[in-house]
Amino acid sequence: MSKEPLARLNRLLGQIPYFAGLDERAREEIARGVRQKSLAGGEQALAEGEPCDGLYFVVDGQIRLIRTSAEGREHVLRVLGAGATFNDIAVFDGGPNADSAVAVGPTTVGLIPKALVTRLMERHPAVAQAALKLLSTRQRALSTVVEDLALRDVTSRVARLLLGCVGKHEHIVDQAPEACTRITHQEIASMVGSVREVVQRALKELERDGAIALERTRIRVRDAAKLEEWAGAGG
Image 1 (cartoon, rainbow, N blue to C red):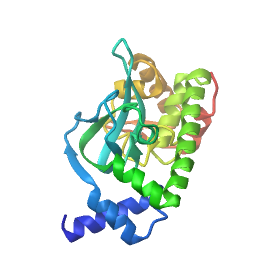
Image 2 (image 1 turned 30 degrees about the horizontal axis):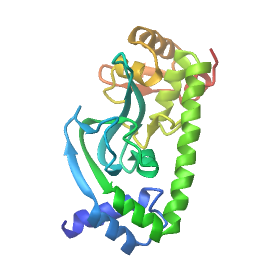
Image 3 (image 1 turned 90 degrees about the horizontal axis):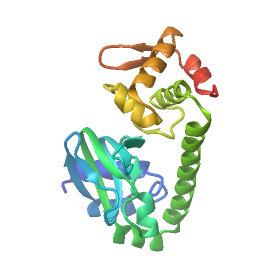
């Protein structure tokens, strides 16, 4: 890897909580061990149930984490942007990949092999401490998702998703501010655990209230405060 791409990768690793506490030399060592892969839109970075080969992170573009039911229905768990990691749990518990990861448009991902992650945790206690903290945060986020599905109506869940695209309620959208650009109603439905027709009605309701504007190729947040009110509403 040439000097400039290596430096850029080093900077990106510094934004990842696991490695933020390491010095530049330690991060450069990690960067040299990273395997990068370019993906086309719709291409899988990894598949649910397959053996774990390491810790992934987004270099450029977006990744959607997907869980598929026995009936073949897909549910989008999270949307990730540059610097966000995935496959974390499988790396630490030794099990298979928990979710499938699919690229949203042209995307580059980095893979840190599992053996290298293990060595880093042994050599740098700060990495292990950061892992505990981040996994605890992910557990809280999962609890929020369960709460949303159980206690909030679809309009509220859609509002929280759209707020995630402007940096709030990030339990679904993580470092991916463009996640709501060129998003379809069906894709929103798969993120909020609903169906397209119900999501369409929810979006129209939010638009009538002035919280969002439905444009031809995107959804634009017009009034985040109003979205917050909808996001806090119950069933």
